Image 1 (tube, one colour):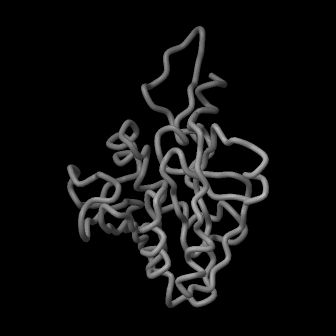
Image 2: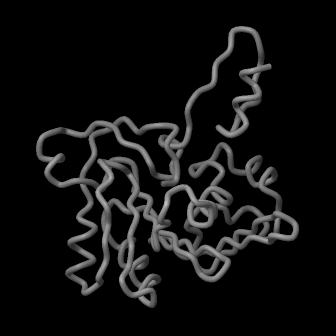
Image 3: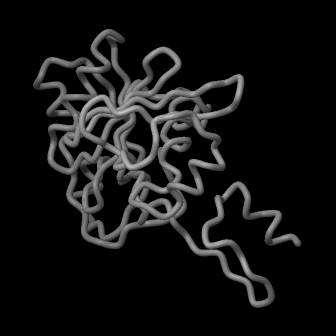
Length: 208
């Protein structure tokens, strides 16, 4: 999951992710966690992980897919490919374009910068806090078994349990890396907040 703070508010269409990948010969498992705008793909053959990511982004409704490559994360989308690197010794990240610009961050230098600097740069654009968030989605244990490929859908699309989708018309979902699923609001009647605050940093502000 890339985010669980916000929610898009438009009718959603299911992406036939599992059936499409299986028809192409990939042996994968994609748990149907509910009706979410992200998907977690587990591959039987680890050698095909990059191919599964590239095949996924060919589907209508898929925004981008990410997977590990050693200590880096590759981002695949119809807009191109990029690599997110992490320098543990200095706790800094770098976004390196391979082709195109999948996260639309090409206006920033491809040098290492701290999490705080990347947050300042990317808190407001299309993918909030994208660099650290995408990297941590695969390298931080947010779930017991981290997926081989994580997929972020465009607003208006979801993946989930097929049967449930037959009984409801889905008008809102969450989980992707876009603003609508990442942003929430923070309110107070007696103090001013910064323009953007990460969820991890909100509790001290509310307790002060």
